[in-house]
Image (cartoon, rainbow, N blue to C red; front, side, top):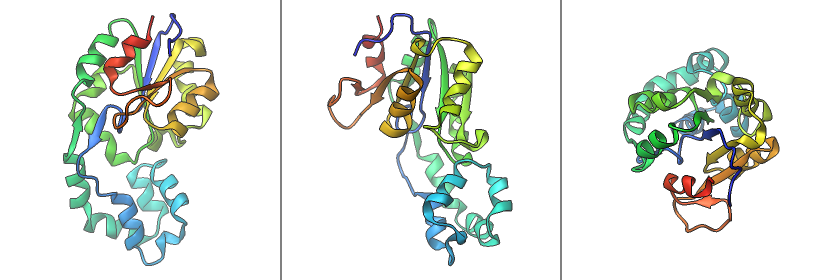
Length: 206
């Protein structure tokens, strides 16, 4: 899949694109299952809330047992965050791409999962980072992608989205008229827009 030769902006997803959780605990889902009433929400509504509000906001809007369970199990969250690693090729590739492109980050995540971006110094590569827990909206909603266009004033076909989720990243980008590549580290390329690692991005640029 050859991309527009005028690609100026490259937008990255975060988890399973740039970084990997080696010891996932599905922390917030675990809290939901431990709650006697499920915080009076269905699991989909709960997870949407978790990823569109800051942790302090969550403690205010969810029943008291959320804060209690969060504190009681925080060691699991800390262990999960400490297990996060950056994929081998990421730093070198971002450094190289940054020489000729503006880089952005858009990620659906719960607020505690922002910290590794700074701990691993990945924030240094990006013009702007847009997190769903701060923005209040999840990919693939058009408005979260529109933030990149509003920040840069470039044309949609001058933007490339790179992420692992077909629904959140690929369909979201397609709906915006952006170019896109799906990173699929576990399988050899099964779609024309699939890549196995970030080094392949430049092969798809003119």
